[in-house]
Length: 378
Ligand code: BGC
Image (cartoon, rainbow, N blue to C red; front, side, top):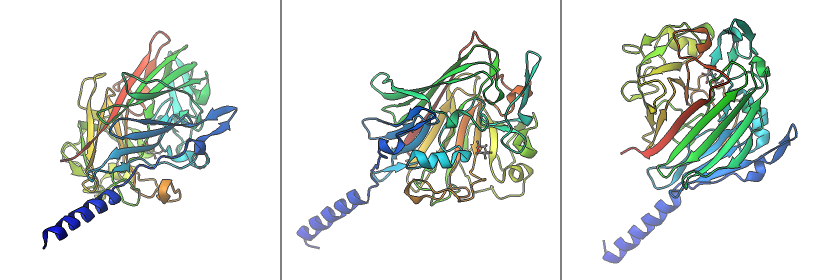
């Protein structure tokens, strides 16, 4: 090949690479501007100098889009979401991206006892309480303000949950700050106080697909969870109270393993969840920040680490999705096309004395810090 031809070929190849790079397409804030129960909703965009971009609405303190760098020099939006507030109003039942609570995950029959008083929470999941009930945090309009921290862009969302809401005691004030760091982390800090003894366990409920589209299942993703034990469940996905070893079971993710490798084997736990829908007992000191999990997609090269101070991590492989909802870019939210890794206390902790306490007293402040850190897998 002549030198001039070679140069032209190289230029054309470079141009085509630039054009094939996936670009960030932000959702306009106007798509989220409406009034719900007299309160204004909007969309807040946070970025860092690498271009990582997260979009958050104060409707449910919810992540709507999360663009992170991929191995081709472009960006992928790695979370499920919808283009407008109207679509969220139609689809709250799958908990797409919000902070869920007051109690993320399940409480058996919605019942617990605190200081000799029995409480009954809303039942919204096969006779049990799930993710704070039908009127939980995910469909409230939170207050929002930009709160930059050490040069990092951040937004703080606040909500006051009145005494008795969904059956929970105490007036609870909760603040959640989302921050994007220069190390490509999305860090979520929570704090909450109460004026009467109560229980609390909020968590972020994003559905991820690191290929950047729900057109692909999540079965090829390689996952590692820093847990030797999990909390097995019985019917309705309620913990039995035991902590069992993952070793020798399809729930073992102590080494990188494709989600799809054993998801269809005959196993009582997998049958109960129609796949993975289990709380892992994190192998680290209670209350200390540590790595909970890492997951990556070879297709995009995107790796995500979950770092948290929480004792548990719920791994849900999107088993109850039936494809009836269509999200951004026409993505059909179908069976196993999104996964959730929810840092939290154990499910049903208020009913198991051997689980970490979920009690919050008036003189205490609940705190949580969880980071989703993105890198390119070499
Ligand atoms: C739960 C699933 C539930 C999903 C949507 C997950 O956190 O573990 O069982 O179907 O949320 O509600």
